[in-house]
Length: 313
Length: 167
Image (cartoon, rainbow over all chains, first blue to last red; front, side, top):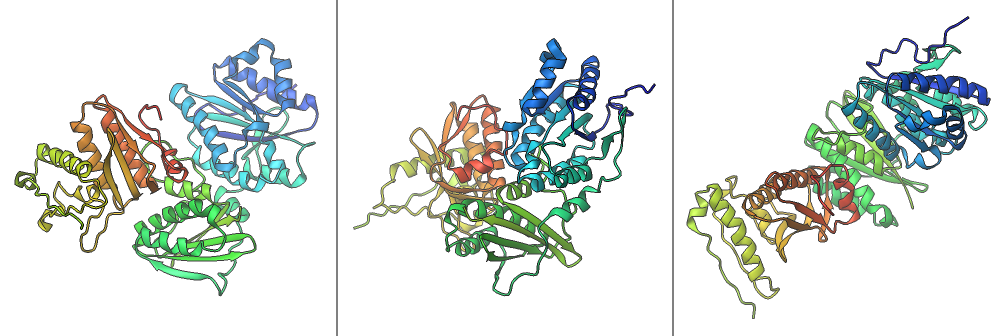
């Protein structure tokens, strides 16, 4: 007889992040209900973000205890793009952190079955680093009937824990976040010969340069592009005093590359970690990544380059 | 005919001191109100040696400020009972704007609206300076209410928690 240990060795002092794949209703119930009941017995707040199926199951199984959840939200309405979605989770995380010693999340990111899987996977991977000190057990539910094999594969690579039937165990498929994120970023192709380039010494030079690159049909994205490039150039100038801005269009995508000779991105996860609402830095990168449709970075001893991609509306 | 006038700044202002800086802020804003007419040009001569002294916020109080090597892209002016920002506020001017607003916060005895409808660009550093300014109002029991922000300006403001206010 094996004893069920819903959170295994977790002692409520740091972050635990499990990916759980379910098929049948009983698989789902057997994992999630003891997890929630254990949390409630320890007075840990629990936020659930689940699909209709998961929410209904919980209401049936938990009965009156469902009222004791800190929140029961609908996955169907939770996705607002990667940055705003992680920011929504982050608000709960900060509120819990300010009020209780430890807490739990149950999340079902159904949007990874749509086109948003690649975008979300970077946050799912990066949060292992930026939430490392959060005393939270996060149980992520992945529905085998709903998700493709590819989506399940990516989920396995971004969750350090998986379920072995009676306790969480280390997931061998889990990848280092910096490596994972590099592997799903747009490939770093050589800059095309027709790219226009300019050297800038001030953020205002940069805004002018971008303004002239936007003449041709990008008016609807002009605000996003100007602000994103401005913030990235501000970072580059802080590092190196001078920056190069290159831009080119390919298909319906405008690519802008900001390069400097500085020591480079010390943290490849910058741009994915929600800035806390105090006065630390890091907001510029977060905002630029958020405004862009995609982003990639390249660091070498010679300097750092960041590319932001904008789709024509 | 374009009427012109010259406004002389009280000599004591140059020697600094918080009381004089505050009266300078008020004075320049009143001058703006008084002469706000497209047909009037009012050059306000400031001695170049004042650069870097506490009265440097003069740069943002004059829409047509001219100084070799530096041109202000933003200016702060009076707007009805309140204030308004015009132009582009970015990291190059945050210190001056913050200094101006903090002086006003110290002098005022009421809540104040800061109209942003003519502000066409705001970056993260600029938004941070507005949070600090709003904080210096709230620490004196008043509110600095930011109103009429355009979407591009809203983007950066939304990254921060402002002291409680009804916008």
